[in-house]
Length: 114
Length: 118
Image (cartoon, rainbow over all chains, first blue to last red; front, side, top):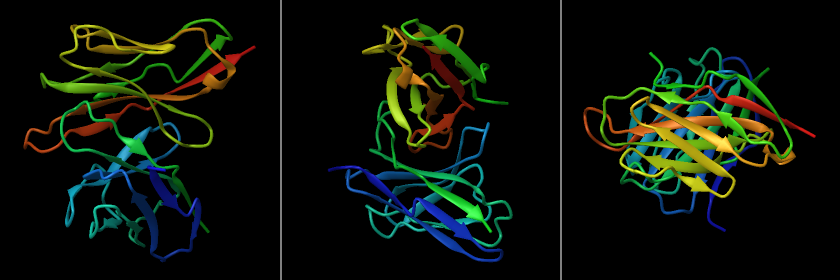
């Protein structure tokens, strides 16, 4: 089945710890995105990548890092610099092209700070 | 300033009734796309409907239709014959090309919580 997978579903982070969220897609999409969702604030863009080995900061990139070594994979690392990481994280992908291209989302990862 | 505004934090509708969820947007681009997504309690974002800025007709997908009023910059979602399974968060999103060029970047509204009661 084609789609986007995210793992783990739940992730716990201790103070000062870096954690990495996985995002994999087999849709052959060029672009991939990471969003953060907090209650009442909708989705905010963290990072996005339109091509392998290239990525751009979104609106709230501080405290996060990404890599895009393969077309299928776009992992997000939440670093210790991110002081308030508790949130729901969504990964998405789409074909690069016109505005009509739909974003497809993964099931999300809930990150909690212990 | 917000690019996507959803003024209704929560909406209630009776089963089998129609409901309209409001969305207004702000852009100076001529070419942009408007989307609606549904997010049930599981968290997954489900694509519902798309409207292009050059589309002359309102988009429809089954029970979903998009009331697109370009001059007013509004893109309201209409759900006809509501079902209990429609209870969820609904997000309006706009995709526009950045001034520097490149791919279309999406912006999401804060969402509207819809509760369908029997």
